[in-house]
Length: 379
Image (cartoon, rainbow, N blue to C red; front, side, top):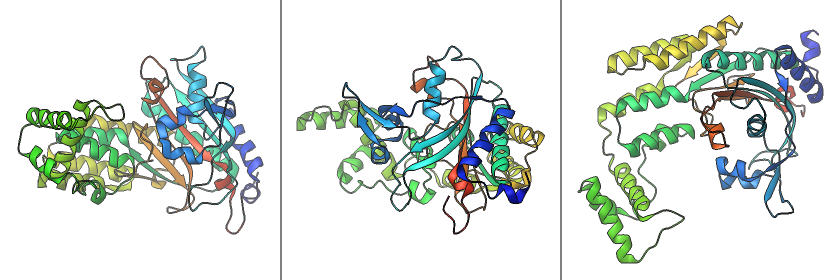
């Protein structure tokens, strides 16, 4: 098929070309049921996601929904299979159902295809296989080269560990990064700081043990019982976190500058890796293992024919799903265009879905309708 013909494929034809590419790459087809338990998605995406689900109830009164995406259903199918815990790879393709987000248009029915790889300890090789296979499948359907942006939640986590930050700031930076917040947003004073200014100021003047006892005493005096399932001790910890964040305790000007410098690094993937090594050396931070992993992954990508000149790395890049634990990526037709492919590593997700221990996992999804969309033409 020539390139001109490829660009004229309908979404249905494109899905067929993608699935055929996955089959040639050796991925077994997995098609989970369209009707899924809603709670498993709400537990991981929050109640805000409820408004995007097509919800109903079963005979027992439990919430169920039309499949809003494939990754979690494929994970559940894998865990229910005889191969659970062992290496296995799957491909999928079909319709997912989501109400359009605010500002979006569409019917709520979207074509999605993708890959998931489970149980492989050679993580960098598995990462490269998934990304390369997704790019090859997209090319089979569309024919054009894509720009790839990558990041690494594991590298971010290692960097924050090496900074030896107070727990409240460690959590705030990692959570803010995962949500795609800017550093100015992350370092901004807590929104409710003024409401509790007196308590927070008092907590700053005593050590952690005394501060925890103070909050617990205040709750007891006020006759406040556990709120939202949180114990008095947990509520106290929350106040301690707020006090640390409000006062900027534990984040020196030097550490603040290091955070700024780290998250500012971006560029062609090999050049970005070199810049990260230089920063780590200058700051005497041991990021060797995480950066070796980054270089190893780049080597596997190159070996699979991925043009590294079209692959960028950004230390600040995140996919805004908190289950990602390592390599993350998106691919676009234009650097500032919509993501056509997205995915990454999520080694901790399967344990939250019922596995007895963490299982290495990485996947990629292709938004088929976006892939086939043309300027001025609906997908």
